[in-house]
Length: 338
Ligand code: KG4
Ligand code: ZN
Image 1 (cartoon, protein in one colour):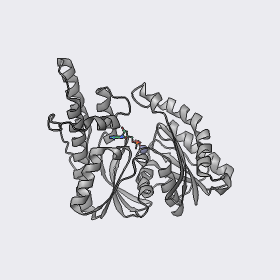
Image 2: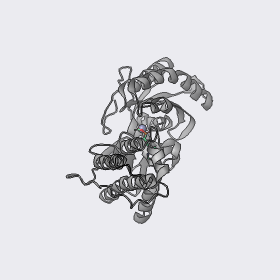
Image 3: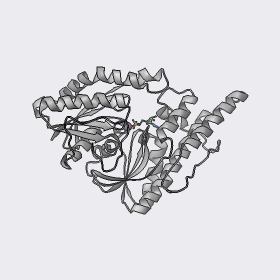
């Protein structure tokens, strides 16, 4: 089954063709990062306009790269939530028009389910059930993936996402948006014990996390040093931030593995590219004797191949939509499909 997949929820326009949920025939991405960099973050209205400009030629490119004629497409999958509403709307309306013109089913895909499904592309033998640590620019959560379309959120951040924490600290350090990857590179070789940063504990669900205190503490530390004219050891601070984020994630992940008894751990989302988190979860998996699945770096950030992967399983579960499909800024991961 050949699925044309569309993703436009934030600042990447992406179109892919994916066969049977596992084989990527083409994977095209048009990033807007250079435009939003000037503003230090994504400007929603600019993102929407750039999606409109990019999506048609990108879809043609994805079909040409895949060598799949339109007649051989079997369905159209699209991210319908969550994201910047104007941005998601562009992809949803393009997908509706394409599905209608082709006379093929339309499959709505939740963006976070897509991130989780990125693991199916890198690990062809991975099947649910497994535990997934989702760490992206907008979301941080532990998800029990009981089946391809049955998932339970076990815990997550009460405030900022891990990516948001990295990006805001990186911005105050003068790194261009989105600073997560730059902060990661800068942290290499830094002395992470030099700066003591808070480790947040939240009341209630022991699997919940909080990153706003860490973000504020790091930013205050930078501002204080600047006001006093003191130099900051940037690699040390970046290493301390990476260590604090990773420790918080890994300790909750360990607890969730114990609670669920799952024998496979997957990681998903843009922050899954973080070198410290990758090495810490690798050690955790070795220590606990569980299988670890990490997506290839190109499938960690936003892409449409992951939407095509999850779209296949949504289709098999009967989760298709008609032309009344809407776009949503937020939507629960659990149970709902449109
Ligand atoms: O999953 P994603 O593309 O966007 C959302 O769906 O939100 O993730 C983007 C996030 C950004 O915050 C970016 O800075 C972060 O992933 N990121 C990283 C790294 N590479 C990307 N954060 C830390 N270390 C990295 N190596
Ligand atoms: Zn994403």
